[in-house]
Image 1 (cartoon, rainbow, N blue to C red):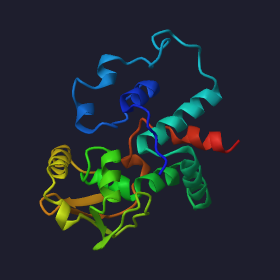
Image 2 (image 1 turned 180 degrees about the vertical axis):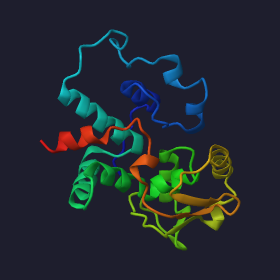
Image 3 (image 1 turned 60 degrees about the horizontal axis):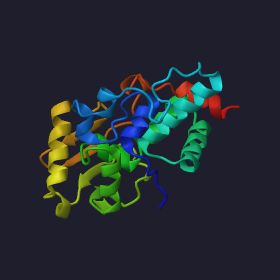
Image 4 (image 1 turned 90 degrees about the horizontal axis):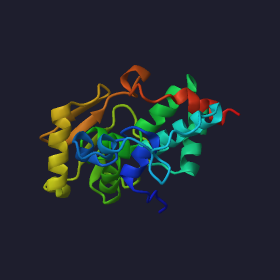
Length: 209
């Protein structure tokens, strides 16, 4: 299966902000952005030329792709699905991304990062409504129950991840029982509940050309 093999800290530095790709490390002073907030590469510290409108749109799209760990072809497909739905395309896009099973598992603390949550899904460690689902792109719907499979509940990495997520708190659109390692996807998130550092309108402008 195709995936992005670029170094995760390098991806964050390229976008100039934390994308939280390495779990708990992102919350410490070991984070690459804390030490080197400039772009990677030989000319990273030089002040580059001002980005064109297209450049800003492209960077925002790349940031969103990297945040959710999705390759270009799949991201484009998700965008056009969001565009076909009723409502605001940008908000629909974020809802499509947040309702993927790997994203929901991450939000519930079943992985310290989206990539680790994706791995848990692929390894049959996550159940949806009592059934094993190993497709990270599986669309979770409001009311679905997500839980860690019984055989995976003893894994130290998952236990530590759930504890860390509980200490930071969970989003409003999910409900989690950390001790039982299960939760409910209550509703699609509203735009006001999602990070303000994402400018999805730039992505819409890019694909609307």
